Image (cartoon, rainbow, N blue to C red; front, side, top):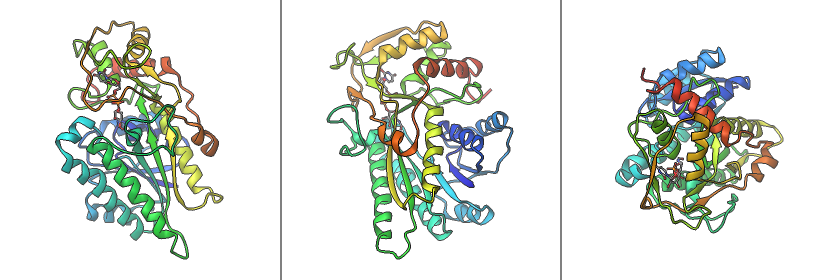
Length: 345
Ligand code: WQD
């Protein structure tokens, strides 16, 4: 099966490429390299021993998609291409809606025209906003609190409407999985690929990792008086390879002839929550490096705690996260210590 991986040079996308290849799939990568490096794909080939087509272009460019779908026999699409910084989305809403929403519309139009009916969409737990309670199940209400999260809510709605329209057709077309990621962290165990954010990281673990390797001075802990065991924010951190393997399981599910067409939603999380200070201690243990920190004011828009109920994915996909906190930390440190400047040598 040939899978088009949009955003395949990015953090989640590159790990998904490894999992797809190691599961026997052929891949074609489309990436505009706006937030990634081509070097990540060379490392994917190093890890897997497999070379694959790479198209440097934009999912928003319909002519580019026409060239790609004409050149390659695509059977399914994993759609990672998009922007994902909550804070940045509040400053640049138009850019986020253009890339994340309009880009997906262009992709779906091309898929329809070329008869490609299987789509796996990269969504996010951020669609749940401030959850009513934890753990979170897929039937919880969605209400985003920022343009990034709203863009995910909007795309999910579009995908549901595509399937709704299908219901009126004699032969349903769309076969869609919406995967809601909790907090992806870690790196492939080889240390050859990992998270390489541009500039100062917004997310916790890449920031901690740069403190450990000496590129940043100290961590600011956003809030120390949340109603959590140690007062700091609690999240469901999931190893990026567990996440990637969940995508392959979702693809298997969609392409299993027993699966009805339609739009299926699954949480991809571990079901465990860890606080910021627990993450700091775990990283110090894994790296042997001190992580100096200071507790500062809460970050606007942050929630106190959020973790998944992953039982739906477990029962319907036969998938469960297997990598624990220490493995997440050790793999992050191996990547960071072997690549202090990320992919730019
Ligand atoms: C985690 C915890 C912070 C940085 C966001 C998006 C989500 C997904 C993951 C894309 C929180 C605290 C963080 C720092 C800190 N992205 N923190 N100091 O906000 O849970 O989720 O990224 O899909 O959609 O919403 O992740 O890593 O930014 O924060 O104290 O320098 O670490 O307050 O408690 P978040 P995060």
